[in-house]
Length: 258
Image (cartoon, rainbow, N blue to C red; front, side, top):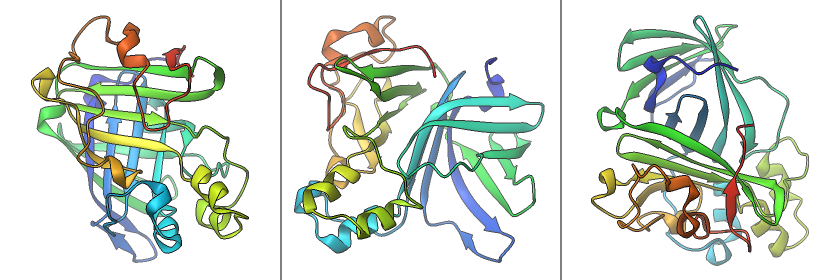
């Protein structure tokens, strides 16, 4: 699979989605970080929750978390058709293709339209996301089936990591939670992390601004001592042994792109 065109690189924030049904949404916080091959996408509904660990949130708050979306994988572009192959997903896999027709209104404004015209989305590129753009797919040292990725674009980062336990089949995460037989099981269903924020080119700690885990917001993914532009960033044992809230016991190691 070839690299995506340079025009797509950076962080895109969704301004609006308009559906054929008449429903529109400009409130959900949606960020799409695109590197030359890898991408990650984070979508957090506008219902602020307290910045607490999962085990300290109520059942109702857990259900609110189940409305979040996030996914990561490889992007494929063919002329004006863009397809996002999800190799990691916050929600259960439903078999639907994530594919749209793309049109650049300007270099920093992108219109995505469904192939069946059922929706269109307006995306704006964040100015400070232009610059060094790269990413690395990861896997757990002690469990190669558990995957993660760290993506960088300009001053921004997005870290995504799958759950320690695979998500069982189901129509959506809310349904799985409603059928959970224990609180422990509920917590495991929600233990998928996508955290987005800024590192300010290494001049400040890597501060998380938006995350599927409310307790992470305002926290630090990596310290300021970690240079995001370092050539050996993805080979750093200090980085790979400290990434994420639910880090595998043996840490992460680099893996080929999926």
